[in-house]
Image (tube, rainbow, N blue to C red; front, side):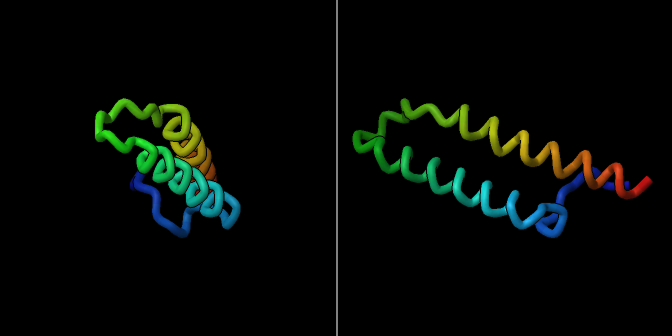
Length: 64
């Protein structure tokens, strides 16, 4: 059994949420005009990780 997630493992709502979070990350990245790299994306990355973990749990539960 593979622990890799595929695009089809996510629900439509999860796909939309991840797309919105990536958009917010991009917006924050663009706000870093001086290129210092001091933009904190960790909160948004944690949200994406939680969504991925939820999809992985659902995938594992469905294959047993």
